[in-house]
Image (cartoon, rainbow, N blue to C red; front, side, top):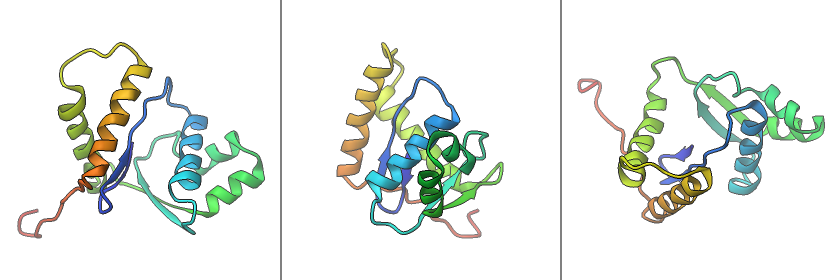
Amino acid sequence: MFNEPLGGWRHAEVLPRRAKVDWAHKVRWLLEVQYPLAEKVVLVMDNLNTHTLSSLYEAFSPEVAFGLAQRLEIHFTPKHGSWLNIAEIELAALAVQCLGDRRIGGIEVLNLELSTWYRQRNQTQKGVDWQFTTKDA
């Protein structure tokens, strides 16, 4: 899942596996399709072994990988980092609003459901209002 909380944008997709090359292709999509004019994209993410710049070099030619890497500013969250909680909020909304407690027949059907959900949510510009005072924290 990609999520831009202040912009009210998200994208969710299920892949058959979670591999470095898969992550690299999704990052390329993010940079070239979603943010083609952005000089730098700040990517805040969890610290999985697939989430590395070396994944770009496994998936693409050195020139393409380098070009993509130059446009990324990566921040890994600490183990209990609050930035990831924003993604958790989106995943919880996805579970309640889209998935429920039903079984879904396969990846294709699931991705169709996901795209319907995130497109509707994006149209309403639903952001994550995750602000609180130090006292409340």
